[in-house]
Length: 211
Image (tube, rainbow, N blue to C red; front, side):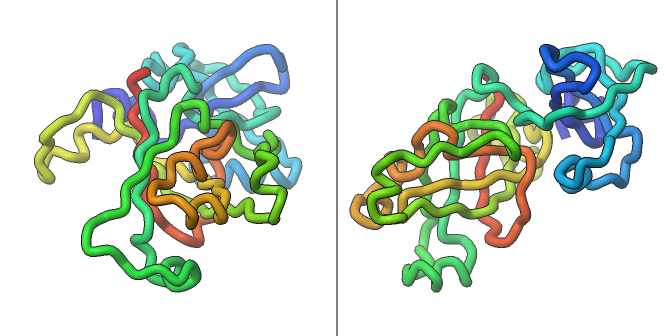
């Protein structure tokens, strides 16, 4: 794991109840708590804030305690260089879409403007998805790449991983199937909320967190 990631085991970016105008990062006091589920159920989740303001520069854990008001995306849009996705690597989902498993990975990209916060932040479906009710979603595993990487060996790969989280990949199925590339059908604003999701179809989204 990267040097930055070694400073924390779990990290949440959030708005605290003590000050709704602030954004903090920190670790849950209870290492075993399901943060997303607890907040969804209206339970208080205590967090030890870090001195830094970004997952890319978290600083040190403090002795204070804050309670989560709202969970945010672990990364701000300004911290994301690119969102690279791998599709059709889950057999049951490929069968549902009536598509064959490809011989080489299906790759597509989402712009940083697709990044958004998890529940209760809204995902805005464009009018084109509402015409024929083709807005759809898939739960994903996210790998956050914490530093520049090129020609990295398999042995060294985890040295570049900042952390893992979950996401939803929001799509317009009609436009996805009517075009040869998927960036338009999957790249609209708020089409990639990250931070909380129930993993049913496991594809991969790699987010390069370097601005």
